[in-house]
Image (cartoon, rainbow, N blue to C red; front, top):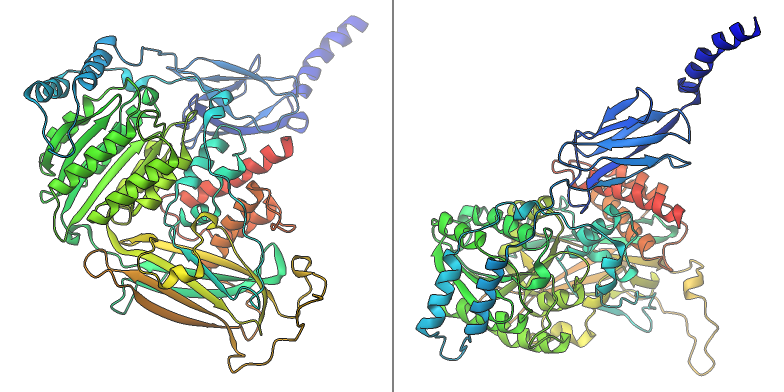
Length: 636
């Protein structure tokens, strides 16, 4: 009889173990093992149980499992099946390895490239090459691809690959007293490389290095709804003031610049030189194959009046495609398709040749631009940061602009590429996937490729009557000396068509107690209170200088006065709230001394309130990244 009852109880126990009340909810995202792509349609099941779901278009899944001892099975055609024990984890992100693992490049293709580079010596003075050298390059252009599956190769990711990456050290700007330092001067920055690079780390399940986080680039990754310019100036300036989200006793001054939007058909003709790194370090799917896919998107945007040359470099530099009209897209695409990687990295020689070709075919009144695509790993010739900086500074006076696109991981040289873009009158983006390539080269085509104002500088003067102290958020590597503002020979940033630029100051109002400005009275200086002045309603004056892209090298001055708010702004606009959320998030990633007591939860809530129109999903992605880093921070 007892045995009978035991047998009857067994099914009940089994059913109880799978009841919703006793289950654990597990969620996560499934990526391919490079982290470049989120995988949809992956079957996620519980081993030895009839419970399964499939990932959605964003690779996301959510499943109820019986217990912490359960094992999840991830299965998708073309990928190796993966099993993960749940244990106590409620979020499990996984990376599936491709079941197809062909060789990267066949040996014959590498031989072709290496033979050409050994034979070719470019004479930048005479701009000529021998018949033998031209024939060698012609052979390289016509060489058919012997491995049609090259673009499907997926290198296995390892955290150790990050060890050779290089970032410039960033020292955050502290609070300044306007009585001692009334002026704050800096160059604008429209680069957005830091954000997509940070995203790459987070998608791998890692927090980024602090110096990889440049807050102004995080903020300026996103577009903002600022008004179009109404005057003859190529941009408008908007300001807004509200309490600082991470310290409500302080005020946040938001400065927004909107570049004039120009329809693509109305843009001037382009003389573009694609300067492409085909060295051995580019030999992985997230480098040269992704580079080629990205540039194919750009080629589709070209018009008949635009022309393209292609210069490549590895052990030496060479011309792969003579200037070709944008209407001959098949010819340009064929030249891109035939590129393969091998050899060392003569970046300096490549830059010399690219500038020579851009100058030779210069279009007066047009867009003359070099587009450099590389992982930044220069190891032959001019390789030091100072040497590259000097080289670029010499070339920028010819009216040729430089766009730098970074690719890859492991040996990624962010510091070099940032210097190249800054000193070459250009912009810098990091391409971690094909969606980012579309954003930079298609969605933001005008801003990336066409400059409407150059040497754009901002100088802010603070009124000590109303401002006890101030701090510029980000822009640490864009700080200028105060006297540089009126010096038209001093280089600064460029603004592209339709681009937005956002800058923020954290201000401590007069009379507010703060540990950031708590110092003992000076013994040897006069300690007089600031006397009342005739500008008692003003908080600060914002001055901006810029030059036209071509012609007169004399800058034009714009002056805006910002009054102190009559009352606290408890409902700032979407632009203000979104940029504040991104800036706060950047400070958390940097473990900033100035982030106050703000949490990931508060940042996520603030961002969700300011998501607004998000047709491309960039803001939704930011919120997901903030949620991911919240979990990563707790696990450290």
